[in-house]
Length: 157
Image 1: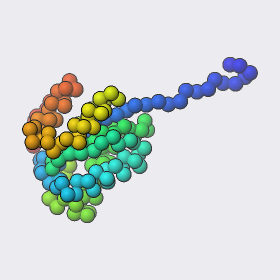
Image 2: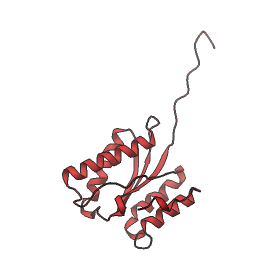
Image 3: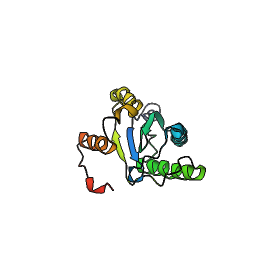
Image 4: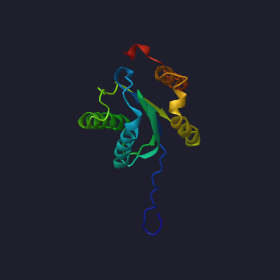
């Protein structure tokens, strides 16, 4: 300590980026393309309100992919719960997707290194073409196994 002053404190630096994936109940193909962008804008609003940065959002009829950074004050489980709860109420209240019942329980959340973001952004952009070749269940299984986690097929309806 010089002159009775405390040294400057270090600033907070974080890079907490997640690839979030969650599906509709029973993987029902109810997220019709004409209204998906409205859903994505709604989710983006939730993320902005929590000081999270959205890199990319996309999906197909039965699931959503979100690539986002989390503000350090945001708990992952709380954010996913808020997204699912708020979007469910919004979808049902405005009848955005008429056959939508619920989101499926659970979700995938995979950490992402900064250098992997560009490729993952392109992957999320290409969901329509990707799912012409691979089902959501196979995609999620692959993500889980790539992250060296144990796939629990018995949790699927």
